[in-house]
Length: 200
Image (cartoon, rainbow, N blue to C red):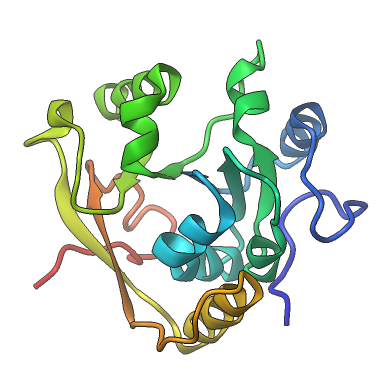
């Protein structure tokens, strides 16, 4: 069970892409919408953002996970995401391809100045939708983010469950909603979708 694959066709499933190779691929596909997920590891990304990643992959988005720990990326490949090493990406001297939306683990904002700076710049410049998960948000984001949610498709729930199982997570029913703290929802309506909505 593997979703449609984002990224270069010649990459071996489960492989971590080089930053240069991914940038070259992205330059060939400039018109694609992009979602980047910044997380500590694959399990965290799947647990908090797996359904949104899958649904955006199926909607034709290029989904990339930037991970601090790339030991086991198979769960993310099940969701159709390409994987990059976070440190290699942050250390790259060239940052010319920006995602349209980014989901970030709050602890990475708190612990890495480069991630914090990128999130704050994105919120100020309004060039990228910013979503964070979890209850413990950095103090400097108080009042700047609102609650939003993504309702998972039936397929997203199945693929997220398979990804969690591949990660060795205990079997549990996957909920139908993923909740985020978001800046302004810039893309809702522009690309014809409303997959992030404010709770009723």
